[in-house]
Image (cartoon, rainbow, N blue to C red):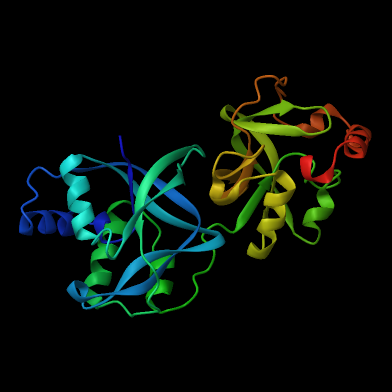
Length: 294
């Protein structure tokens, strides 16, 4: 079953139905499944579309950025209609990515990208279609509006949540030196690996710290945690996005999780510091483990 990640005009049901009627794609169904994020990616108007009388949306790589979109379940007719609507493979082409779901898990999705032609301002009518589609699914509009002006969009995810050796006073806190921290809590399960903890997604509460993270520092953290690019599985940790409860509400933040830690005991309190000082355990571990494998 192919899942489709929509980020532009296909978010708008009226635009989609109008296209299918004009091209006689009877029975084409795009069934909304869930909101999702494509990590290390941003929106850009860098394709000219004659049918749209101006710039059309595209995706480009940008480490640390994230695009809000919607996952749909298309039937076979809808998949054919999507290829025609996107001009695939001549103009846009199908690509396959991992999208991050609201609970931090990932799903394999298909979406469309095209080579850049440089910035083209969108026509007001096309921009209105995308705005309407985003509003219908409760998606953020900020990146769309900045991209429409040809500006480099501000980061969609501006925070990082930590729960172990990166917390204040812990062995790796120096990697985040100079950043202001607040207490936070996420849904998850904490496991004790001895010199450090790991978090898996699941029922429970994990206590930690949240901070605003300059985008340019994220690559260093990916390397430190052995995380694969674009939030994909494959490393020891996986970078995801989670809602973090803070004193004044909820913030979305990057967090590093593992997908399987059943071999390690659960920390029932969800608080790494409840286990006492682990600096000596970390020092012993660091002395016998190459930096790239910690």
